[in-house]
Length: 403
Image (tube, rainbow, N blue to C red; front, side, top):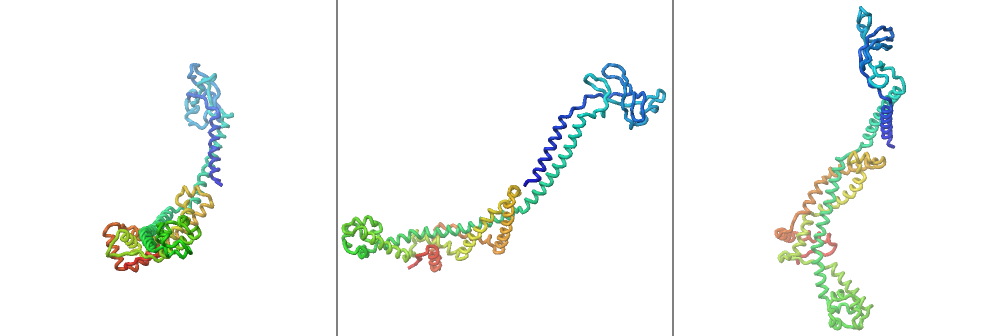
């Protein structure tokens, strides 16, 4: 509950009420100061005085309460020893029917003074309550904002970004190898399927028509069978849907075996653009070696650990966010920051940030020039086994051979 917020609100309300009461109190009348001649004076200050009416009614006399604490030199007989008169100052009204009459400042003891006293009491209490609300609220705000760690959050985000980047860069390098390898591999498999005569599938049809009759309608190889499909084969005289389905299934099994065993042919002495592109893509992973793969795996794992922690610790990124969060959210944020500190310490001990950055630089190194292609072919000729190993690891099947 925002207790001090309500305390502050009560204090402001009291101050507002004080202002309202003060405005409702009657104001003091307009006065003018005049000199008073004291005709006689008692010890308690009760006097009879004479004054000159400033509004043209001549000199006037009347009772007045003089200031008993004024300097004795102004009192009789010290002021005028010959006449025994004293001297004082006072105020007369300047408007209304009583204009020119004496006015004593302490004579208003009615509702006006009472309202003023109430207003003073309200403003005093209101200021006290407001101060309590402000001080208590700020103390509570400091307590609520404890645990704010923008530096930890910033370091954790940078580490997470670097970890995610190295994983993405390694995956991009792997995809580049697959993209360069796939058309070469597919072309090799298609070429071998095209060289396999359709007679290899005659057993699947279990009878006629023979291979010669298939060739007359353009079905000459296993690749043609796969291209035609079961529906087209089923339209051939004497084949039927079931036999056509068996033939296509047999062709697919042959294609799968070739796909698993076919090896892309690479000859460094006879460069070809597509095989050169494959070697260039492979060289990035070969140069990085197993260390680059391990770094990418570690980066992916670290990013997956840091991402939920950063989300839970978000309020600790700034005081405003921390103050807006609820108690449970703040507690979770502080716990997550503690875990982030542990992850940062572990990463610092292992030098992960530098490894992530350097590996990303190595994986993103541009190699699209002719010189890069030549370097890749020379490197492949020097260590073909490494290229074979990397290609098998990336594609899952198929090897690179120089034969």
